[in-house]
Amino acid sequence: MTTGIERAQAFDNQPIGGGGAATLFHESRWLTEWVAPNSLEIQAEYENLTKGLASDWDKILACFNRVLDIPYTSAVRIKVSVDGRTFVQEDAWLDPAQALMAPKLNCSNRSFVLASLLRQEHTPEQVWVTLGNLKLDGLGGHAWVLLRGNQDYIMETTSPRIRTPITHSEAHEAVVFFNDREVRVVPGRQVTEPFSSCWCIPFLEDYLDKRACYNLK
View: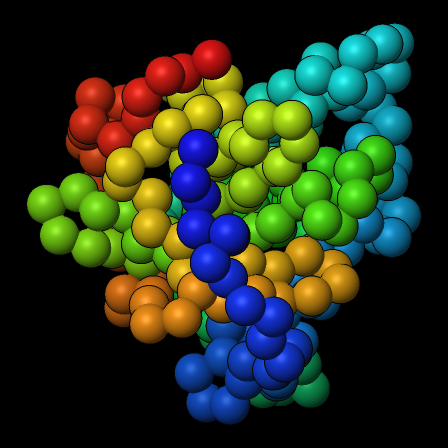
C-alpha cells in the first residue's frame, strides 16, 4: 500500500502555536509532544488493555478498539476558570493522558491516544500520527494513525464500525507524519481547513464505510 510516507521528507520539528493554537492558553507546542508513550497514564492503560494477550496483533486490536469505543465529537471544547478568569478553547488538542479522561474525542485526539498506546511495544519508525485530507466529494482535513511493519495499516480512528486496520484506501491523502521523535512532510501538499470539518456530518460514518475503505483485513 502506498501511504505517502515513501515521499515524505524529514522536517524541522516546528512548533504550532500563536493565536490559533489548539491548546487551552494558545501556547506553542512541538508536534512531537502530542505523542506521549512515556505518560504514566498511557502506560497503565496499555498494561490494563493488553493483560493476558499473547499476540502482538491482539494487543494492537485491543488499543484500536479502546479508542473506537470513545464517543465521537467533531471538536473538543474545554473551559477552565483560574483566579476569576475563564479560558475557553472550542477545538482543543489534548495531551493523550487528558484525552483518556475526556467524555468525547475528535479524530486528532483519538489519533494521539492510539499512537501513544501503540508506541509501548512498537518503535517510532512503526507508529505515525498522520495529518492529511479525506477525499470524499472534495477534501476535508482529517487525522489517523499509520502503523508500519511487514504490512502497512491505516488505523482509521473515527468510525466505530471499522474495527480492522485498513490495508488500502484511495481516500486518505497524507500530508504530515509525526511521532514522538520526528516529523515528516509530503512536499507539495497541505491539510485542508477547517481541520475537523470532515467528520461533523453524522451520516459520514456510513459514507466512509462504503466509499473510502477497501480490502478490510
